[in-house]
Image 1 (cartoon, rainbow, N blue to C red):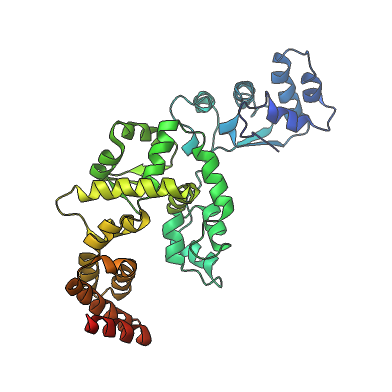
Image 2: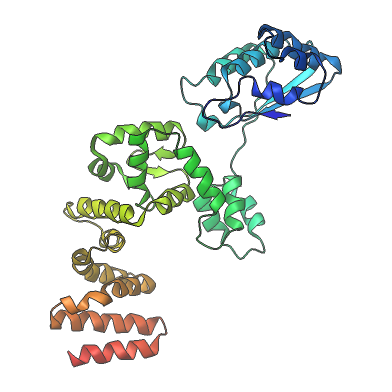
Amino acid sequence: LSACDDLMAPRTLGPMRDVALGRDGPLAAALVDGKPVEDVFTALLEELAAEPPTVLVVEDLHWSDDATLDVLAYAARRVEAAGALLVLTYRDDEVEPGHPLQRLLGALASCPVHRLELTALSREAVRRLSAGTGADPEAVHRITRGNPFFVTEALASPRDAVPPTVMEAVLARIGRLGDDCRQALDQLSVVPSHVSLDLAAELLGPRIDALAEAEQAGVIDVRPDSLAFRHELTRRAIERSLPALRRRSLNAAVVAALRAHPRPEPARVMHHAVEASDVDTILAAGPSAAREAERAGSHRQALAHYESMRPHLHRVAARERAALLDGYGWELYNAHRFRDAVAAGREAAGL
């Protein structure tokens, strides 16, 4: 068993050195400093043929060095005669066109190969894993898209929190992308759910082309009319890694882009205005967002909009303030917060 490491420059023949560690066979002898690298090719086959059946497992091959890929390609074409088996694992979303691993995969085309693609966990699988945790299995499946690592980490963490392990894994992966791509992902990360292509173009301008790198890396999905992070936990991890001032400015950019549209969705505008601490927009979009939620019977959402406006109502004319406080009182009543509802109603009546 051996593995490749996510290093700035992969270890030369690292997996072969792992296999030879603590052994006195031909592979260990071939890896001694000063020996020609060609010796490793035949030495590995000798090791594989020594005590058949032998299984060599090399994990995370997408991080491999070139020499290891050459040795494995050589062994793969001869492994059947040696009575051995190679088990090679890699993340397909890390292998974009032109990746060095493509050369090895091409060489395997003429070999007896069985490819096993690991699929995401189904809703039923997530439901079973969630049993007894108190978590909503539908919500867990939605934010993880069935990624086994994300699922198990999300279930082990407090509700709505981004697990530190997921945060670290996401940021390590994003860190390998170019600067323009990372900046574009920062901007998109403050927009929950999907981002329409029109909005993405307004927010990113020419930088939108840099997202091709993120698409190839499996970070985002491109749909006919929108972009979305493949996993909601990835979006949250990036968003929560941003300094507060940066999050605020990125949300302000979204507010400006949304308000430039002739009929923006009030609830979307309110979300980003609150995140950007944009009081003028909160007071401008809040009343229509609250009324829209009231008409639909979404009382929790209506109350959230009123509570976002509440600290700033002193900036509103008395008649409008009274109307907003009256609506706020009714939503407090619907939430069974009766004492607060009476207080809001009295304040409205006093105006």
